[in-house]
Image (tube, rainbow, N blue to C red):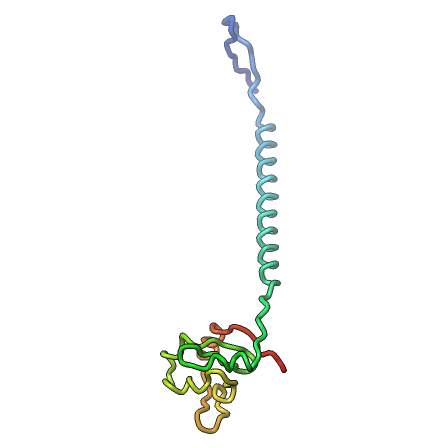
Length: 143
């Protein structure tokens, strides 16, 4: 350890000790501990927020078959498939089966979608199932 001299107002030198390496190390350790705890807290908070977000499931509106029946045109087409209610209005012009989708407007189209209907039913692909889920607006109210 060595001394550093500083000049005071009367031009006298006053010896001042340089901080020891031990106090520098303590300072670095303290800062490091604070940073570690800060990061742990940030990680904890972000995981808590994610858990809160994941635990909240949206409540879908329950829609009756009578309400679905009102939406039965090319310009306003709702349908129900396997208990889900879907607004497929914007998709009707893009349907691969062209006009066949209009048969599903305002009715339960489960048999059409799963291929059980004898004349216009067709088993739809996994891609079609995923696409359909993007149009989900509710669930069918059990009567």
